[in-house]
Length: 225
Image (tube, rainbow, N blue to C red; front, side):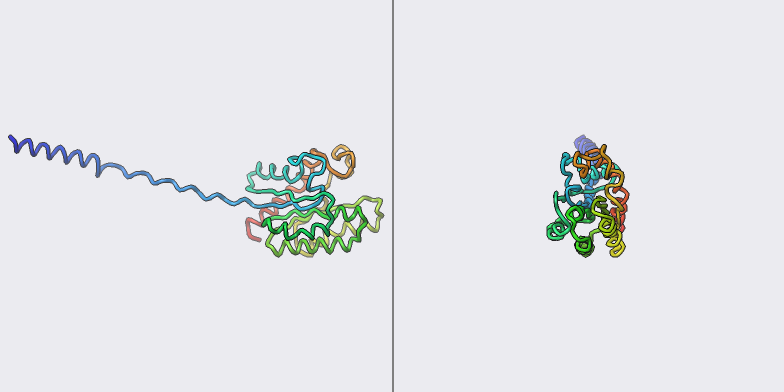
């Protein structure tokens, strides 16, 4: 009788061990989080048109551009590096600081204040050329924003000024926005009372103008061109 009980207990224990061990499914592996993709850093360098003089910072074109890019699925970080009143010489003097931001793309919109002050277009072109060269040497993709000058500066001056941007863009093979204020410049409905600086609505138009050029620049970054 004792032997029978012993064998019955042994059989029961064997069944329990099999049920709890060999047939038990292996635990699921702990999922490994996918690495977070680093956003493409876009730095907008320029004067008051970039800084957004007279409007809320969230309505200046860099902030509006960031929202549009993100809404379209682009992983970006847009930095507003505009300084009101800055000339191209001033921009060149702080190029090292801007490069310390390690930009992937630079939107360069400078020279407007040079024109308003009557600075020799040859000087402005030399500065912008030097800026573009420094950015390219750093590996950043440059989007150069073209400017127009007010007509009261005279036809000779305005023509020479206008030619700066396509000349520099062609020399360095960078992306050129023909005129950053296309559809905005000279339109009272889209400008503040000074007729120089866009309103928030004006900056919406600016963003629509520059958007395809910035997307092209992002494509160059992503492809390594």
